[in-house]
Image (tube, rainbow, N blue to C red; front, side, top):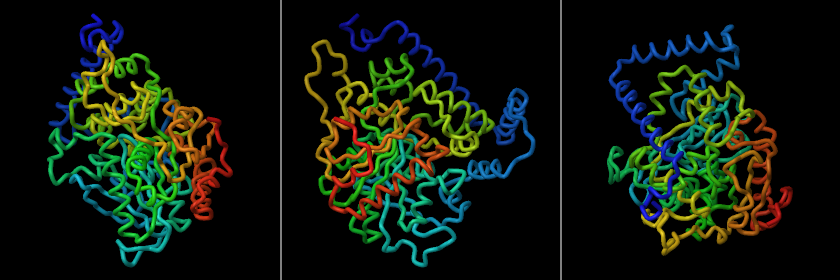
Length: 460
């Protein structure tokens, strides 16, 4: 069957997984469709029943809420970025920018310290500017949904005198609008990493600089937020002049793949198979529905199970209460196409642009062309990588081969992917490294090689 496209590329166990996946998705879709027509009291009834079952079979018995549990519950229930900031005493600003291709992106800003308020919102503060960008299936809330301020990077930076901005990708909770396409249309969701790199990142930074009147920003990305910066800086030479340092947390460029071999093999065999499972709009859009029905500890357990299955992460560095608080803010809308793009990258083991010629995969005569790769070696901006040695999505040796020589690296022992955001000791292990990199840039501006000082460099 090798001459038959797609069929010859799958083994028997992959076919079993494929058929099982379709049945599961059909069942889940039917359940979600039914739930959409249920009145709120019935949905609340399901939520209450799941809570009763949890406490009946769980070893964690309710003995009255502690102060820490009250905090976690308040963070979990916060409806948006503004409520999360308000809970901790920070006044935020909301901004909306129009990308060159017509998407409206939401930006959040923390211009002042705790309990302070800026008299003239939307104007320059004269402070150094820091821009933070989230990962895949996320929005800006993931940065501020922590259960204490000492571990919250944006709050720490605001206290240290930075003008803090947080971006959002097209399609997510704060950017689900376009002047050209309806968000329910396939055309609205027809975007991948390429579009983030060509438009979202450079247009967001341009807007921030216009408001702040600063000459440059410091960029801090997490996971896909780093990939978007790697791509954007590589294809926009002039953007390098506007980003004075790029700090990549849990950097993503060309992951080896998933920990689940069947899923990994199936998706790599034909990345566009994902379109058959999820369509061509938003991926995993039912997550919010299940979150509303399930008791928070059960929902957190489901997320942990999924992360362990797909990525082999045990998330032991994230406390139970932090999971309860943060997992409620973990998911946001993303396009199916952007996930397909990632599996194309994994399949080819190359940080490349989206491949529109899906028929080329697995062709008997081999590929007649190679999709354009992001020229990441051309990045001039100083780069600092912070990654965990237990992060299955980071292939640091491959990454360093594709980055310029002035890249500095810091390995965090015992850290996985999400630990860098929400780990119990990020205030000791991660945030000081970020602050140190920002400070070194301010002290040694224009000398990227000196930014290596204090970081363990890995041999190439």
